[in-house]
Image 1 (cartoon, rainbow, N blue to C red):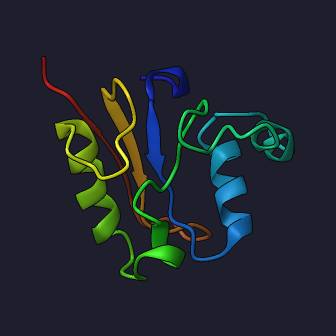
Image 2 (cartoon, rainbow, N blue to C red):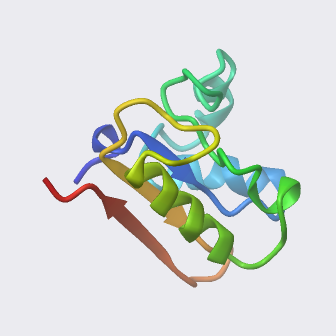
Length: 109
């Protein structure tokens, strides 16, 4: 899979700058280009890569990724309150700055 195969992402957002770093580290944009990638609403519903449709760690709860996995499952099932259209693959991360975990959940067709 490549970044182009991901329709939405649940990125660990304990501090805002780490969201930008993850966009670069996972290849959604080049190093130092996250500010340009997001400026036209790319991360919003209807954007190129809606993120944290459940509110993220800052908006929902700070539980080191478990709520992100639950939201990714809802996205691939098509049952999220903030459902992204035509989801086939969701990237989920659970920490930055130290290697913790990341996964991709996808629709099995």
